[in-house]
Image (cartoon, rainbow, N blue to C red; front, side, top):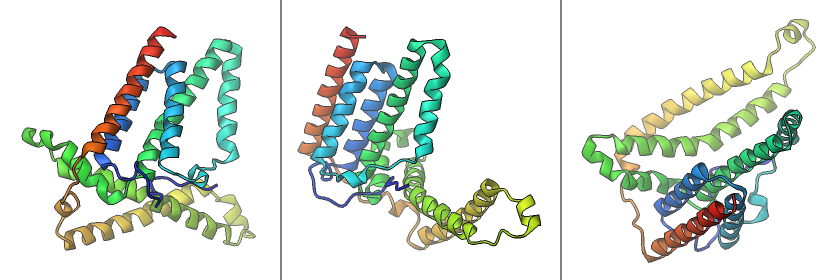
Length: 246
């Protein structure tokens, strides 16, 4: 299985040049539309729109995650469970599955075209109005940015732990009797994550605190306004079509 999640694909494209906040707003607008109007016409338009964005962003086909067989097997099993209820239930299940995949694709497009260093400043700038209410916007932005940055590292650590576990001898009867792969890997992953979190906290403190991570935010420009206008027009057209063709 090969997953490229929350890692920027280093290619030059108009989508990569957009401000990080613009792409996050676009993903939020798409998610909001699908949340209130997840009909098939709207889903189809959003799928085509996201594919078009991927083409404009010049993302190679290797960027797409190659999901394992058991993922598709679980999707098929869910459809089979709904078969006794009727064709409408299977169709509704497929609609929910496509809805979830579209939301994930929109999130991944933001990550594939945006450096992680730009996420925290953009979030801090978008949440600036909340500062007047006393909300810790900078701290929230840092938590989100570090979480996105830490997910690929955690997945890599789990791969290493799984590979190391396969090398352990298995001829001991006591080992075979007490074997529990899931608990062993989760325990080791929690220990590694705790150690890395401590090291990361010390590094942030040594470099001036979390305020340095949200400093020097970028600003939207003319192309960001054009991009948001395109997103609004596409979402508006999809909403109109979804209401006309339920």
